[in-house]
Length: 166
Image 1 (tube, rainbow, N blue to C red):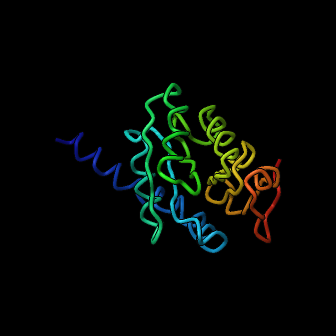
Image 2 (image 1 turned 45 degrees about the vertical axis):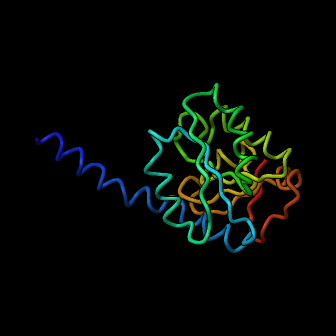
């Protein structure tokens, strides 16, 4: 009984940290690209559920299309799923073991979706360096980072005040 209470308390204690992960990103997206209302998340849902829920809680007015991947072998299929769900941007989930910032799966998705003019956004500097068009959140120290090369590939302009990364 003690363990289950401890586990429940650990989950509750983690919610505030997770809940704020996407606040800055969501407000930046809504301000700069308000027409992009279908956000796609590709992740291993079983381990990233709390972060997906945190994103959904700040995505007011935007649809979250979720693509579950169990391992790197599923990432190729995820590109087709993003297209079939009419995804207008991909949101990387920090810490996801399959398609999170810094993972090979994320690099694959970023490159394939950029060719389809679908931008990727992240909450970490690693995501921006990997090719996400924009990144802002806990992993950027609150700075808005932008990847000009990726922005040009998908046909978008970077917002004012962006700190460039390459």
